[in-house]
Image: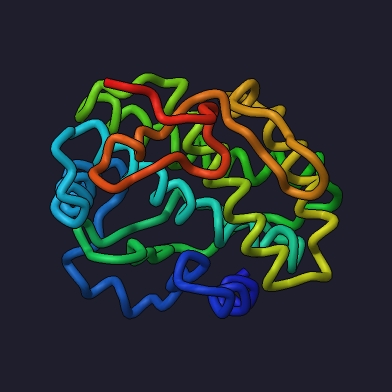
Length: 226
């Protein structure tokens, strides 16, 4: 499992998770959902966002991508799914949120159905459900928007993975289909065209940022007026 995580970390910073036991000496590591408020504050300062819910949605979307990426990479490239239950993070750190697994464990998977079940359990049940609840408490964002963010981040992470590791591109599409029909992700969006095309059924609110616009998978075709 540690070897798999070390390999997929080379894809980019969103795929990197430390498994070094020496990290335990760092007192800044926290468990989610602790630190979600700090992450939203850092995001708001970086964006200059006037609305708390816009910063909260943006922070949530980035964090969801951060959680999906290493798990999807390990599952598709190496056939193993790490448990994120022991995951720790450094709250308020700029850029890709630093992640560390205080204990490395997981299981082998075979086929999209088995992989989807294990990935969903690891990412959503062990981490994202708690993160969603914390973001909702901070900014009163609708559940549908949060699940739309999770689905958008999922497909985005798979696109990066398919480009970086073309040998698994076909399986990326299969796993996307299986996951988008699972649990809270069900009904969050629809596949569009070939490959990993996707259109969500909610909007992440990025259009409300000064100079912002619509994302490529937005439910809108033109930005709504205030």
